[in-house]
Amino acid sequence: MTSTIRLSGGGGHLEVSFTFQPRNKRKSGGAQSDNQSGSTGKGNIPRVARLLALAIRFDGLVRRGEVQDYADLARLGYVTRARITQIMNLLNLAPDIQEDILFLPNTTKGRDLILERDLRPVAAVPHWNRQRKMWAQMRKDRIE
Image (cartoon, rainbow, N blue to C red):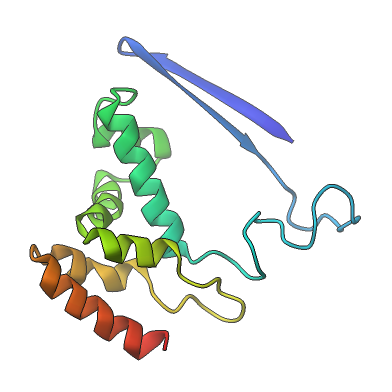
């Protein structure tokens, strides 16, 4: 089921399209394969990778003026401004760390190995070299 939402006001508009897939729908072997997320391989994309991608998208919306500010994003997403800030702070990570996060292996069993909450102290460090050391330790402890 596909739906489109159009929001107008304040001299601009935002249009969002999305598709709903019922969770309990039996797989019929039709257009979609066993891998419904569209990623390569099995499992789920880690939530922190999805949040970082969302932060990058939100940043683009604000830069292009499609959304006035982060408070507008919070209102549109029905979340608090504090939560938007937590998500957007992922953009304070060094570019190579962001790339590593976006390409984390899919979670095939159990919980994600790295959580957004775990990255908050890393993103709070203003020096990328220190961030890299913290990230390397986190990867060593949790992934490798």
